[in-house]
Image (cartoon, rainbow, N blue to C red):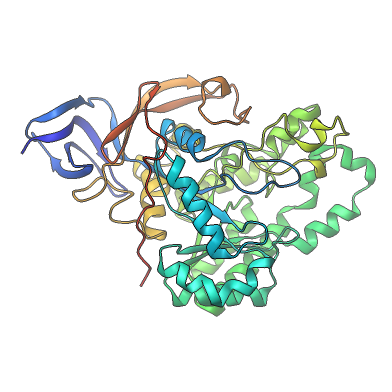
Length: 463
């Protein structure tokens, strides 16, 4: 057999083991993994490199409606370009219901935009806001049958925050149709009360944002979410967990047989609440929801990452431009209520986790693969064609140099945001080549892909 491409002499890393092997690619798929494979039209020497499945970023926001007057910087072309340059080969962004549109019309609109512009493959979660409730029984089951198998509900944010009865209804639908419910777990009533109780002078400090959602707010909502999951029997995943107290609730649930799943993000592994004390508007570069936590929380989340409390590390890429921040654009006061919460991170997700996790010995290379590729593929119905390097899978492969170092600079990144919160951070371990279905999109600093080559990934319902 003549392969299209053969990656030789590398160390193949799966979620379970690492081993030296060659990888043969034909027709966009992995067809052989073994020693001394036959010839190929393209030979790649991966000596000293790790051969890993391309990352799956299962939480990112792209081309969504404006929020607090701010528009997301990335479209599907720029977002997927950045993702590929950072070692990610599949994204799962959100369908955020369009104004006066049904769930189906919104899903079809997002899918058409991704089909026209995405450079890598994609799937979608569906966000359910209060205006979505009339469409639940009418549209959501059919959409799930068509592959939109994950939905997100909020316990916070005006217009999005759902009551427990509505969340239970959503969970029952996802359970019946083999899907998964994602929960943003912050008690919105507490958040709003705390924000309204702030001394007006404190609103002039961006750091006061953290006062509106202390860890107790996340802890309570987490416990309530896992209780609803237990009652409904639905597969449920808690997104962007930031607080040790919330992770403690997840451990509590698991100890009682409640099958709760959990995700965290790089910002909660490398940033702290002290970043919000950065002088002036620069602090806005670190404002996300939930807010950054204490160093003790960061340390606890790392421990829970290593111990299996978390299944996924996603970016929660939410790229509002710094220069477009509402209050800053208007020349207003340093009022956190003028700042849409969210950070860019599609391209830096994997390098941050590898550098601070694998390179420091906090997690193993196998855990890295599990949390960034294999587990998202399994949870969201993308296995066996995504999230693994094995015969039959799509040839979504990243070659990593575990010893290479660089300094993160926004000028070197490939998204359309105008900053990175990780500016100046030194990282060890870099993706040097990224393959999507056998096509090399990123090669040692050069990106080459045609917008629109990405495909809607097939998903399989959970039994």
